[in-house]
Length: 588
Image (cartoon, rainbow, N blue to C red; front, side):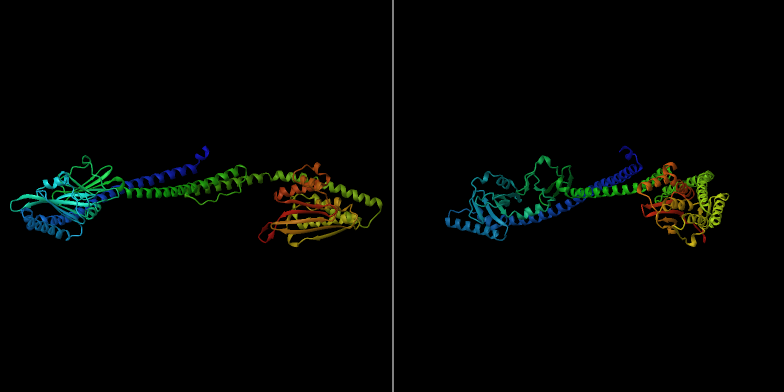
């Protein structure tokens, strides 16, 4: 693991990944901070426009309610009837009916009215609503009554309540407001009028101010009274900012909330929105989640890119290291083929040139040892000629001993040609295949006479292979072994075939007999002797073949030599593998 960490692949991978991830995180952080600032500025601007619009809605509501309240307080007939006193019951009843009719006409002029209540200073109460009214007997002790009594004739907004302030039967939510009723002649208050309307227009106007689900909105009077919806709790005054009367709109961003307030155009009232930070940051939270997903994907992509880039640099170097290890064990045939960055391509090209140069130097060293190989070939050849000479002389001896023969002249002539051929090594150990076959003809003539017609010789050599260069005395040891060990003791007609077969760039010169053959043990010992066993282990029959196999490999390489197949009772086939080299139009 430690060595892997110190590899150039892992180092480059970690470096690229760290750089790309750092840049990605820094850019994402800067983008997030900038977006946060822009979003807060956008929310502040939107809040100012929203509160200004809401203030306009409340101004319209105020004007409508103010006109509604003045329809009674400025009604001269009703004020006259409220001030009139009489001891006549009929007159008093008519006056009360008239006042009720006036209130009823106003009640039915609007659809949002829940109830209208007129209370005189003398304790007289006139009600008009949806149901039969049951007046709260303790209404004078309630704050709303005190606020209306303390007002100086201007309309007072009391707020939104869960039920009627004075009617114990009316339990639906109401928005209450009212004002004092003045005697216009004497300029003194004679009572109050309380209006209770459907609170939905006020609540809708307040909801229009909300920026989020948890926003709280308030109407605040100049003396600190709050008008809010029935669902929002009253705020803690100490936690609210001081409203500057000189400013019409105020925006205050606190760590955990946003406060937006606007001064209404009537009576110094303020409309205020308090939005917690969790509502303001909904978009930021979504954007943060989106950024996390994008960053995760980009980090994965960065990891992949870092891996590909680091591998594109390290992979050619690893290939070159593998080839260097092959060079260490002596293999100079491999070449590094890569297509990478310019510097690496130059390095690989230099390495390939160095390996080729080393291979050329090794070839020169091999050429310098040719003389030593030639000396060894002569030493091997010296083991072949005496062996054949002794056998031939022994045969002539027995023929002369028995009886004279006309074939003796031909036999001696063939023997003389063979001696002359085998003794001439001045020009080297290579001859043409044609010269070798001519020499084999003399040898086969001797063999035919020796076996007295028990041997049939079949040759099939294509003339195109006659110019091929072969080592001298290549075919004779093979034929000698075939005759001596396979055909000489055969109790039937012997057949000896000599023919050629082309396989790719290899020419096979095949000597095949139908003799006794060899079993697996004998064949294996012969193969072992060819692969490097000592001549003693191979026996007398393997000495000539072993020498021939070594001569062929010395001259042409490890690919060439002898291939032997044999089956008991069937025969033996020995293939001499020779190279086919084409230079121009001449086979050499």
